[in-house]
Length: 206
Image (cartoon, rainbow, N blue to C red; front, side, top):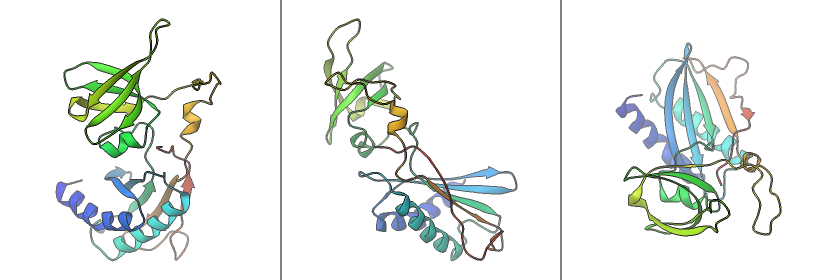
């Protein structure tokens, strides 16, 4: 996707996401056989509900039908919430993952695995797990020190009272999953006169 098309799509879709109370995290167009996939990723501090995804998908469909931003070639629209492997690049991403374990690549080349305790405008307060029976330690990390960061999926993590928690993979079960609308180049639908939404589960960001 060219920079011009990316900017145009973001300019068209971001106000729709904002009006729905969501943040537009990503817009990407990728080839898929004879069609293309327009993937729109949205999120919010409260998570993303399925109804919000479906409603936004309809609004985006209408906006794209009235625009030539996608050109005349067939495409599939996918509106979804972020997956667990989404890079953490904005302060709000860290806020939404408080309490989770993250793997951080530092700007100086080092690497750190720690739990997010608190987030402010300058950086993170982290809890670094102890090794070989040692107690966890606290560490402060400024955003400027972070080169890359991702959530680490945890299994059978114990809570502070020693009780076993369910696998973190299950904790990412989506409030909002994904909605896909298929179009051909004449804006006709394969099986109906109105958009059809296929809902499939995708992980939620906290």
